[in-house]
Image 1 (cartoon, chains in turn yellow, green):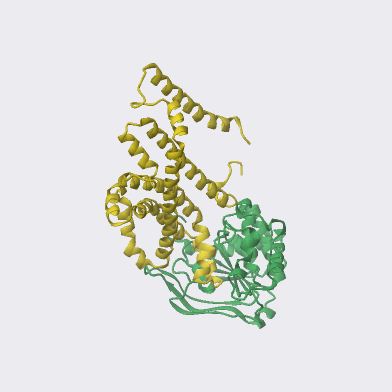
Image 2: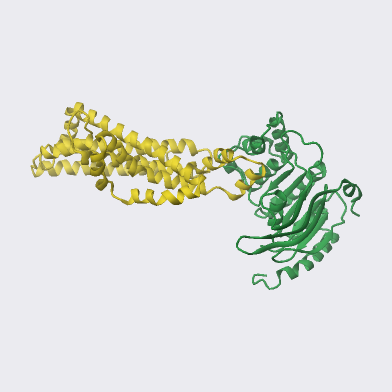
Length: 262
Length: 266
């Protein structure tokens, strides 16, 4: 199972990480750098533990926003792709606007959204705007990549439009769709963070990004790092979970999930 | 001699009358073509790439409509539940990679409006016929090219069709596998009494399998020549090496040569 080669692939990045942290700790100590300029890794860890009540609450807020944005992006992206697939007219009419939403930087849209929408809604909408496009474009690509001969076979056996969609197009599009969702997971976190920073309001419902901005104003640099660490971990976990789901769904049949030996 | 009297009495399975096919791009792909295929006959269409032989199959299957002329496919006898008059085998196995062998063969029943009660038994029979009974729960990627083709054949046979349409089904396989599938197909044809229309670019394959070989001209495809392969049945490997077989191949190849005239890669 785990060959020496695999072991090296896991150990090398871990070693680099540990060496980086040690170097960082060393530089801070040797040069006696103040925590409000650059905190040492150990201090960041201590702050993470000490401020856990505040930070964990913020983490919960950000994760909930991300989840809501991601769910909206997944449902909205797939639904739009299905609509586009059923009607070319709809696709021609709406697709350019999806592209415009995608290419306009969300950081520039966020302040506008905050004027017209409630803050919590605006944050979710931001996460959605950033995340839905990869789902839409990948699912569309998947739905259009159906094997022509298989489609002919469905026609020969008199399949209805719904049967063709359920038994041919959707399973065929699944690998593409999952690829889109994997990108969307990370993007919805980015969208949530951007919107939180743009919103910039305090209170019980403030997420990690707000904690970072707030700590910055108060020169509480260790807490900034601690919050950043949490955000990064959240991103890794989201990606890992989506990759795992994708692997479990595709492992029996799709090329992307094949082991090297088979 | 061809024992054609009983098949002749049974009438025609497929009848094309002055059929032409012109694509939307204005390219004339086929015809005009007149073709009658007797019930139970094994007929091959041979011709260069792009001569419209695949198009002819798609017209018979109803996957495309002719630009002019008529396509008649007779639906013979009482239709059992879950039966379908036509089975189609493509050049690629055309399997759903996300479904097991069993579920791939089940597809025609799944799409049928009146599901067959004995679907499971018939799927077992079809897999048995192509020699894949032990691989029902495998996924297509776990199978070799020849085995995938057998699944495709089982799926075409499971609805007990009158007519089997095969579009260069073994072209992508290695020679040994192709020969084995040729023999298995011949024995299936003898036992199941299907009408087979077999499209191929291989003269050797067409002569080996068929009762009648039709050589098509270059685009737009028409009937260039027609041969009765009046060799004794059942045919086996010894036929492949016989002088009789070589003679038929020479005749068909000779008739095919003009179809390739003027093609740069000929």
